[in-house]
Length: 153
Image 1: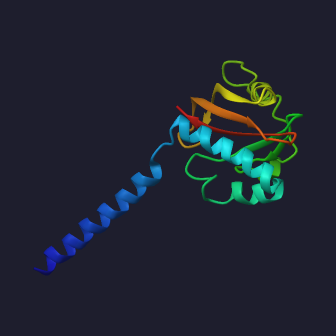
Image 2: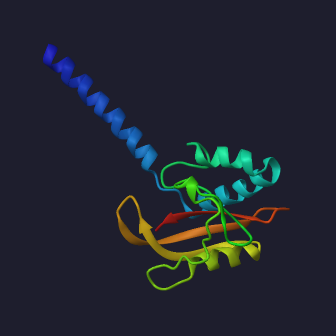
């Protein structure tokens, strides 16, 4: 009887843990990525870069799972880069994907036009392999800044 209680509790705990992992692992859709990028651009416009940096580098609505918000200025320099905050000020213009696509320039040019999608191939840190990635880019209203969010396909 005691064994059955222990077994039941163990199975229940394993089920709860697996459910939590599955819920966190749910991959965002492209529509969700677009919505996050637009919301991030509006957040920057309303609250400024300093507040955005806090919100974008802390786990929450702008940073979860593989999702995080990048911000560059209209010269192509990182303003906010959550995976490596020390890269602030570095240019993205020389970034080239495995196929030779100038993805840094593509992201900048997409943002300068207002908003849109860009696709490229990039190393996924979760799998350590090159994978297709799609990124939504949005110019920040009233600022010389561009916010973007991407997901691996």
